[in-house]
Length: 216
Image (cartoon, rainbow, N blue to C red; front, side, top):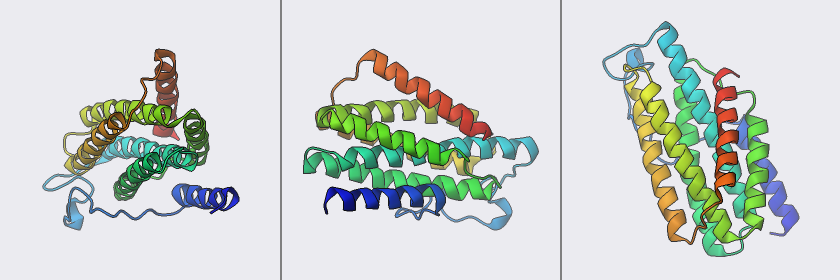
């Protein structure tokens, strides 16, 4: 495909990611459970503020996966080598599972996706293109740093989830394992170490996104 065709495909991907339902290739990590406990996990129940907190945290994670899709799509679009493109596309496929899992769990909890998702997608896609244009080693560097920050973010959420919500907990644990693997893959493919100011800026933007998605 020429660049125009690829851009049209990217626009289609962006619209599907932000406005359509996503289907996972892998099953939900929690397996199948009965409808009477689906809002809490096996053998327990969630209610009131507890359920609301789980929904807000899963909305943040869903928004994060929307951003991850955009970042890797942007990087893949301008990747210099087929090898780097393949790494990014594989990560994007696994992150798409995360997106579907979060979407499913958010719906179960009665929550809705963040209304800011289109903004998050556009900003992350632009960042992905910008980092990719710098070269593959920097693109891999952004992947590694992104996954490092996401891993820390998921660990924080695992500590904040209501104790009864084992269903959401299993989803986040499976996501964290994938993020660690993605970071290791990026390092193995020659990731450059990002300068400290860039890491700090990425963390600042991430904090803004997570705080806004929690409420909106």
